[in-house]
Image 1 (cartoon, one colour):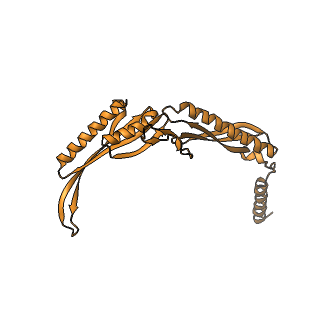
Image 2: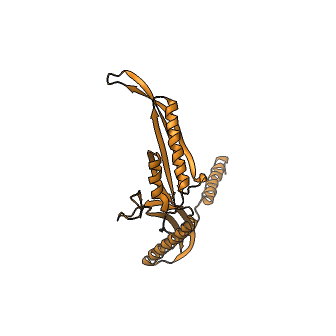
Image 3: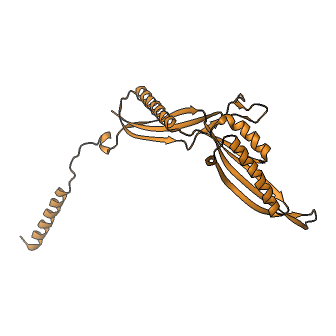
Length: 244
C-alpha cells in the first residue's frame, strides 16, 4: 500500500470515529413537572372592621392684623390666651394642646392706581388640640370661636388603639381568600395543597364614613353640631395555594 492510500484510509477512519462520538443519545420526553414549577391557585380576600371614633384632632387658629407688628402681636396674644383658658375650662389637658403654626408676615397695601399706601402686619397662631371626650367637641368648638378663634382648619376623627381591629380584619381577609380559593378549586375539579405564599396589606389609616342620614352628635343649646360617623379599617390578603 502506498503512503498516499494509507494516509487517506486513516483520515476516513478518524472521521467515522468522530461521527460516532457525536451521535445524539435518546432522552425521556419532558413532562409539565420537569420545569420545576408548581401548579398553583392565587386568591384575594378583604377584611373590613368598622369602629366608632374615640378621639378628634382639631386645628384652632387666631389671625390678627394691625398697622404695626406690635399691635398685631398683642391682639393675637390676647385672643390666644382667652382660647387657652377656655380649653382648660373644658377639660383639655396641657399635653393635648400643641402649637403647630406661628407666623408673622407683612402685607403691602396699594391704592387703585398702584401706589404703595402702607403696610399691615398679620400674626397667625394655630394650635393642634386633641379632644379625647367627643361629647365635649361641639361645646369646645363653640367656646373657642366665642373666645376669639377665627380659623378652624378641619376636624380629623380617629381611634386611639386599632390593634385588635386590625387583627380581626386580617382574620376576616384570610377567611375570605381561603373561601374563594376553595370555590375556584372545586369549580375546576382540583384539590388545594399547602399555602406557598401569603401577603397582607393594611390601609394607611382609617377612612371616615359619614352617616348619610345627617345624624350624629348634636351639642345642646344651639352649639356646633358634630357627627363623628364611623371609621373603616380594611386589610387585603393575597394567598397562593399549591394544587395537589
